[in-house]
Image (tube, one colour):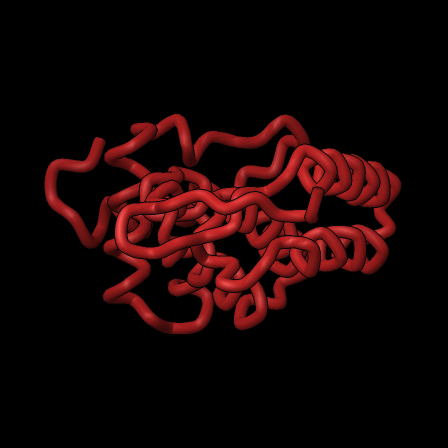
Length: 164
């Protein structure tokens, strides 16, 4: 049995991830999470990039790609490397599985990155999408007490009418 089994996805034939690959992706996701918890951010990024390398091309057809791109992008965002973070979240948004564009966290971080790099038009669009998915709650402080969401919510309120 090969690493991949064939699956038809409408017009494009893609390889379905095998249980072996899914297991390895789960292991690398957990490994990256552990590194992140230990504040070993470069090691976390490397684990998640290794996982991405196991996903066959074209990677944009697999929803698993979104998770790893978002995890990597989130570390770049936390480190204020907004261009790198933007690249990750933009790739996640464009994922052809359809799950990236409908992911509130991806929309939030993409909007935040756009604002930080000076792209206010797209910042407004993506922050509004995050708001439409989750409401004001998506901008609330996280479990670590990080209240950066207030900055982005205040920006959104000044650029879009009827945001409460």
